[in-house]
Length: 386
Image 1 (cartoon, rainbow, N blue to C red):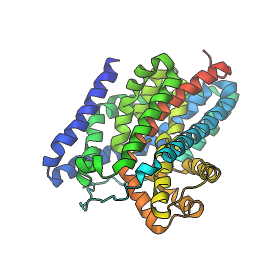
Image 2 (cartoon, helix red, strand yellow; image 1 turned 90 degrees about the horizontal axis):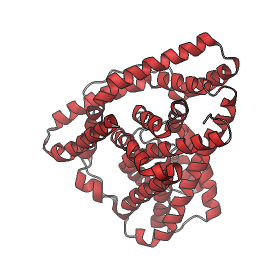
Image 3 (tube, one colour; image 1 turned 45 degrees about the vertical axis):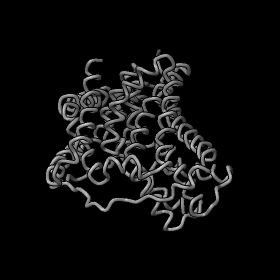
Image 4 (cartoon, helix red, strand yellow; image 1 turned 60 degrees about the vertical axis):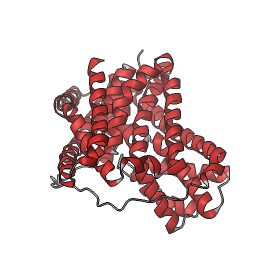
């Protein structure tokens, strides 16, 4: 617990330092710090497919014959969770839509973007989604045939990756997110970050936080507050990096502590980082509905919205934790189902990218709540040993 509190403190200190000191730093200094963060992220992204493969495959094998049924529960739970969050945002937006009509202006600052001074350009030998698919296949097969040499190989591989994360990545985590925060605050100063979105942005953040509080209350009951605070470092990491996958080492450790089930956390959290998007399921529908009201002066019927939600939840499978990916896969759906014009898509994209750090943070926090619901359900269904 002491280690978690220390990490929590350092992450908050990095955020505060970026807000307080950032305006006084030169562009060269910010670029240098952002370059360090980018290099760390490149290294992490290079091992992420390997990490996903070893964590998920070895985790699945620990459930033996119940692994197939457990995976069914996991994917069904993700789809239901994304759907519930999307429908919740529809209800909130319909109730508050009259108050959104004055929030049409969104002036973006014309500042030059910060880019890394150097990049490693590491080759991607395998994609994260390919590693995920391979891990599912290997994990299920080995849970049935129990071939010991391969089981040992998976366990040793996971142990090696955990050592690297605990001894190399986690200690550098505050520096890792500092560069990203400085970039965000340079390109969009703090005062504008708090005001440029207007009423819509504020409402989305409030809804996300209230939804997460209720999510943790349902998932952890009397332990909700402690579990929520344990997961806060993953929230801050995701907010700085704007990537659920990049925050995976921290969210994975939080889930292990909160659930007390290491094997299940190792299976669920890498999967959730790709497809469970609580924050996007709240922000994207609200932005869609408000944009339709402002430009088209109309809103979809609930039955039409349910069709949109169905496409939305399926499309989220293609995001794979990519920063800004949530809106990129949605553009064709916005145009075909909701009648978005090019102008509306541009406004929607800008709004989404501006809030992406908060949406991604909510995605990661939602993962920490859902994993314990599956833990509880798995025990009741005798898929997980108590």
